[in-house]
View (cartoon, rainbow, N blue to C red):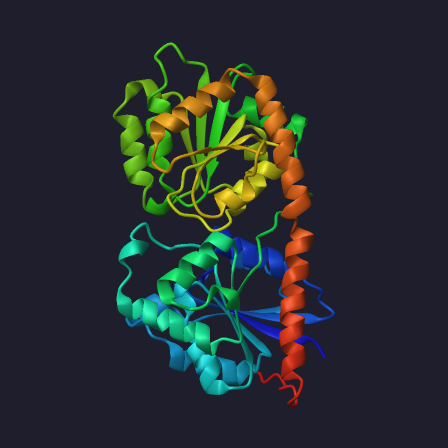
Length: 385
C-alpha cells in the first residue's frame, strides 16, 4: 500500500518553497508514495506542474473567506482524505498540525523553510507560543538549514536537538552550464559578449532586499559602463525598484526587469555572475540553481547562505552593505579567471552536497519511518467526495 501524504502549503504561486514541493513530488517513488496538496490561500502556476495521475490538489481559499484560522476546515479535509502523513510548511500552514492532532489518524510533520518577514525580530509572543505548541504536537520538526533550526529553537525555546535538518536540493540536469544557450539568450536580450552581466532571480519582496543590489550597481564608477543587470521575478517591491532605476538616467539602459520567466535555466546561462542580497534566507533554491549553472555567486552573509557557500565556492558580503557588494562585483568584472574558478567550485559544491537525489532520499526516508511507526494501527482507506 502506498504512503499517502497531505502537503499543506500557503499557496502554489511561484516561489522557492513551492517550487521545492513540486520538485519533491515529481521525483518521489510513485510506487511508494501518493500525494495530496492542500493550498491554504490560492493556487497558482506551479499547480500545473503537479502530475495529475498521483496528486490531488485542493484549495481552502483562505483570503476569500475573510478569516484566518482554518483548523476546522483542515480537520474535515484530513478526515475525508485519510492521509498517513500531514506535512505543514512555515507559519501560514501551522493550524494543519492542530487539525491533524484532533484527527489523530496521521503522523504530523512541520518544516521551516525561511523567515517570512524582515520584521521577524518583532514577532508577537503569542505567535512564538503557538509555534512552540505546534512543534510539540508534531511527530517530526525540521528546517532546511542549521541556522534556521537554531533561530527557531532560540525564538521558541523548543530544543534544537529535536529538530532535524534537510537541505534543499537542485536538479543538476536542468540547471547546468550551456554555452550555446548563453550566446543565444545574450543576443536576444541585446547583451554584447564583452558586457559583464549580473543577475538575480526570485520574489521581489522586502526580505530579498534587491534595493541593496541596485544601490551597489549605482555606486559603480562612472567610467565603468560595460555591464548589465537582469532581474527576474515579481512581487511587492517591483514598483519601488522600478522607481529607483527610473530616477537615475545612467541606470535605465543597463537594468532590465524581466518579470516572471519560465526559462530560468536559460536566463542563468546568460549571466556572468549571480547575486543574492537577502536580509534572511533558509537554503535559497535560486542560489543553488545559479551555482549548478557554474556561475560565480555573491551572497549576503546571512542564514543558509553561510552553509551553502564555503571557502572558494563564492563571495560573501555583509547584509545591506551595498558598498561591499559593489566592490566584490567590480573584482569579478575585472577577473575572468576568478569567475571561472569560483564557478567550477560552485558547481562541484552543489553536486557533492546539495543534489536533488540526496534531498529526495532524505524526504523518502523521513516519510517512510513515520509510516512504519503508524503501521501499528490499520492504515486508513481513501474516501472520495
